Image (cartoon, rainbow, N blue to C red; front, side):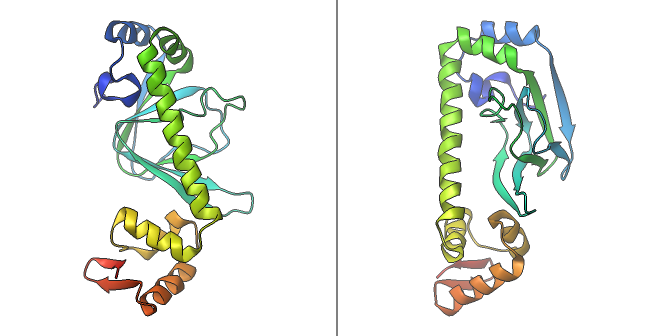
Length: 203
């Protein structure tokens, strides 16, 4: 495993003796994946906590109509499926795909529950992680449901820097590439965006 236990946000500042004792005696496994591999499929059971120890992944959602968009990109060290593992349905609402070579530490949820019960620092960390993810999802919902595509493009550039790859950006924004190309061209024509050697940037 390429990351230390206490580098992981969930366990940061926790009771080292307790955490190590519980985890040493609990079922777990460490799995590696290559870029493009599916780590978890949308709709499949989520019964364990997934901890990203190396590399990066992205979460993709597919609607009943077949429309796809990238919900988030996460880099190690990070906790995945934190809001799903104790849910009533107990399924992954997104597909998690390796964005690079990565390693996932898969932990038994009952061992996590025991640690949370006995260590208030880990409990606080867990609540913070879930709350931060919920805030992020609220922001993404606002972007997709309430903002125009033009606003989403400018927000994307403000957050990620120059827009270089229209195909990749279209995938992340959940739109067809031709639609994105038209919108970018309109924004350039309006003087809102400009194109230089780095790509499309805010004018």
